Length: 372
Image (cartoon, rainbow, N blue to C red; front, side, top):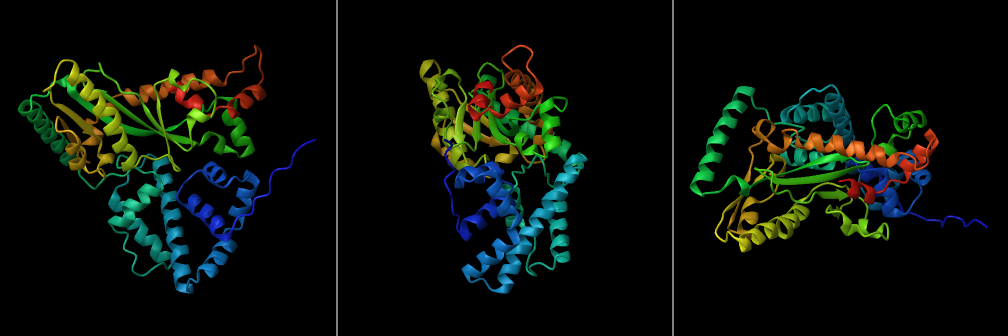
């Protein structure tokens, strides 16, 4: 006898929150997990978006002007995000000024809020909502200025190493990137199946991975993964200590100041202190951050331990001088894709395409951590 799925009744506020999660670029899976609903229910809510927004506005007592402002602000963000994705697909480099100018233009066409100025606060909020880093959207800086800034940064960097007597083995670089952790090469049957059924979401889940190593390559910290699953250790009764990957859960799988500060204090500083206790109590260390981490307060990080200097790459220098971008991350992603492909292969010899698709559906965040 089969048991029926428990009926879940969502309030208008909860349905509106689901629509807001979609507008911020969060995956459908995060909404399904948060409210315990099926995919069919989720898509019904998406289809009734206009009705739900009207009901929510009425229940909150919004004036017509306020409701129009909320709707059009969301519309501006959606249109700008689609324009950004098209530019990215065509490998067109856009700047922050391009983004702000386009937002003003779209807001005017939609007859949006008259006081909308696409300022710095809107820009930072837009980038955070859609998980866009400074490496994706650059400031308006001529290339010759970038080259000059890179040379100037190299001089300042070497001067700092000399003045504080920091050895190269104690210079660390940390950077984070997005990994589409379930997507397989285009030529596999997984992609063909996803395209034919229109279910590309089965390949669109992503995690944020943080990498950190020293300049000589002799010390590499465990990779930090940020995903949407609540707790990887609870997924299976396996010994998850078998791998060194560190996992953190966040609703949108994006890096934030809290997670980074926790990593810095409880992992990086502990490594430094352990090395100092062994044989070098007075050695100085340097942590070089990517410009995408410029939202962090460097003074707060530096005050946690005076033997570590925290330095951030200038925004116009990072694309030219980011150490982790010198083939390390790209090599990691290639190897990850190979191991993921091996994991999806059917256990039995002579497995069919359907067997491979079934195995792929069963891949979980635990598998992602294991492969990393």
